[in-house]
Length: 330
Image (cartoon, rainbow, N blue to C red):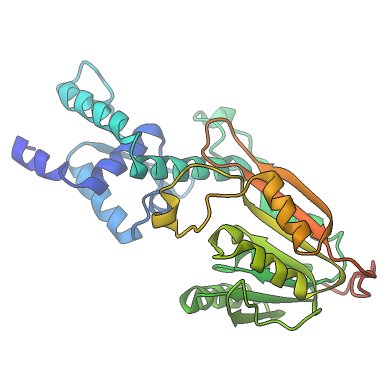
């Protein structure tokens, strides 16, 4: 490729971001889509152009095509060494930008999910990889669900419904609430594909839930509270819909300074300090409040915290030890 064509190719911000993350990790199209936040068709188009230019290499593994920065850009003895040096300098500068930090956070999440799912990404050498089917977070969530009675659950700020579907496996009924009609449509489609029939979908705000008083045993707020305009009010609403003895379970982010999430992810709050979150739960009327670390890895920008509390009163009869037959799901 001649110099003008190469410069035109590298004059696109998305392609430079793509090359930067591929220098750090081999990734497939689905993972790149999650990191870059653009459509899969766009990722594929950019990859095709970079591959044709000899800047990206492709390798098939386990039914997926994985991409990596081409060896020519990582060898100091190759004719592309000056270009490689230029790109490395650009990648280092990008690390200090909001877009670079956002890409790094999403790359870390991809790596975390790989490790959590115990898939074939454990080692670059196939002879060293450990395949342990069934040890993913989803498998353990379903296993622990066997220990729970058939609760009535509210998934507040349900998003695209992944937690809703998991909760439906152990719940007698789930009420899923989100403010976005488009998101709820995708969540309903997911539930239909999984043949879930015990979920009621409702559009509403966390601060004004379309659920009657004292009607559920468990209220879930998974990565939703930092999107609430008024987190204290959202917690008060969660307590309102609980029966006496019911529980609120919050999974959210510890207080951080990644300001880019406000514009790029729509966050109203940059997480919560442990003590502040515990105080909000108590102020909402909950007792037996606990706040613990849910997930944290060295070098990552975010720490996940988990908090819970109990609404005072007699334990709901629905929280009995006898289980009803589980819904069959794929």
